[in-house]
Length: 171
Image: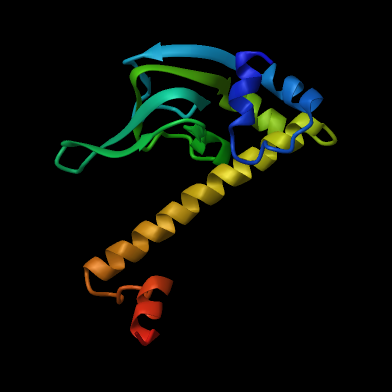
């Protein structure tokens, strides 16, 4: 198994993918190493995306006051910078390699062609990985919105199973 295949096996949605399909999909990516460099910058064109296999990526945005704010740190194995696949043509954040990172890289145009391919098992596996990445991001956004709603008084703290059991357990 080469490094591209190894990285793909760690990606959500790829656990049950047949080895031949994994090999075919891995060949469509370029393996790259970045050290302390920006993979992309906020405001740039969304022309490529990555699957982080090793290392960490810092995600930063410029606030309205022009101050830089780190909004996330991403570790392996994660798909990043894929907004262009969703039709978002301008990057909303900067992705920077923290130290040395190893990634699989593909152009957005190639990714869009792959998504549109009918009857290709590699395309089907790729769509599954995209769905898993988007689902994870939506779940995280929902959690953060809930926390903000509590913080500003628009919602009450959710009751966890642990708090519910503590409240109803007789000792």
